[in-house]
Amino acid sequence: MKKGITIIDIAKKLNMAPSTVSKALNGHNSISQITKERVKSLAVEWNYIPNEAARFFKHNKSQTIAVVIPDLLDQFYVLVIKGIEKIASKNNYNVIISESNDDPGKEVEIIDNLISKRVDGVIISVARNSKSVEKLKRLEQLGTCVTLICRSLPNNIFNIVASDSEDGALKAITFLKKRGHRRIAHLMGPKGFQASKQRLHAYKKALLANNIAYDETIVKETNLSAKDTGEAITALLKTKDVPTAILVFKSYLSLDVINFLKKKYPDKLKKLEIIGFGKLPLFEFLDNKPLASIDEKPGLIGEKAAEISFKNINEDTETKTVEQIRLKCTLAKN
Image 1 (cartoon, helix red, strand yellow):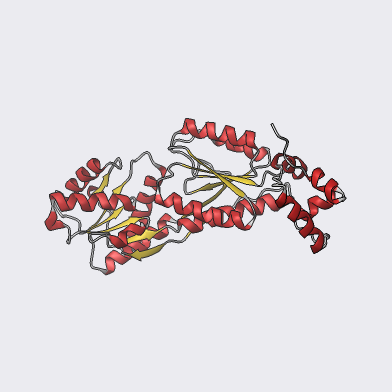
Image 2: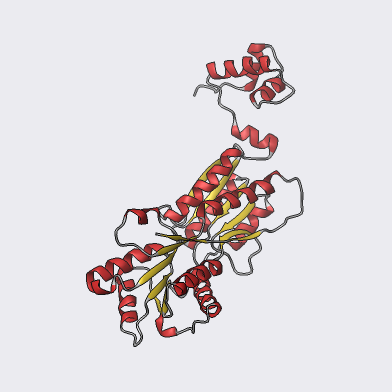
């Protein structure tokens, strides 16, 4: 195999010290512009590629952060990644992305791989029923900054950036009350999900703040499938005092609700106003869509998580400050 061009090769050709070539390639202020241009010109001509492994051993940094998410097709996480990439690019860092498929076992395998790669930071939305706490602790012991996004862990000791569910629910319920609604149902996710519990709690607090009585008969669970969602909506429509509005666990479920109503209860479509957690760009192209969406600011979540990572990566300190940020939501009319 042909040996790659090294800094030493360039230094010999230009009759310079290897340290001068290295500084020139890295844009060091102590090197003249003429020298920088000579070095970079030859580097381009010879197709010089920096040795990242050598750079790691010299600076003890990989110039890489890793992102681990449950679902690469989820629009929410796509926007989170864009936010992370934006900040990483400003810091001249590479981003590697892994998908856990919400599988705790696969998540552990991914983290083991990241431990071996010695990445500088890991931003992770942990899998449901995650078993990775000890692995994440190991990463931090090795000097890797760990930041959670969206989902927390029991007795969490890591940085975390997430949206404020209580703020989002309060804005949604207050908005619906102003539109004359008093029977506001909640379509919740599976009871075992932490996010489901958080949003149910947020829904209850928002009702209380608006002097609306909580009624458990208009809180229905879905396993997130279209079929189960349809059954939950049917149950709501069969209650004695039918609700006039619904707060939905996730906005994509709102589409399942609307499609079900169109097929089975078209007369209810205009009478039932819907607000869901999460803003989907495709809503603007639909004729039948939710009244509004709770914008959880996924792009900003990504940016803030990346900023925390680089703050920790660039600080030369043994003291760790854990940051736990809950971002305020906005209510976006569709």
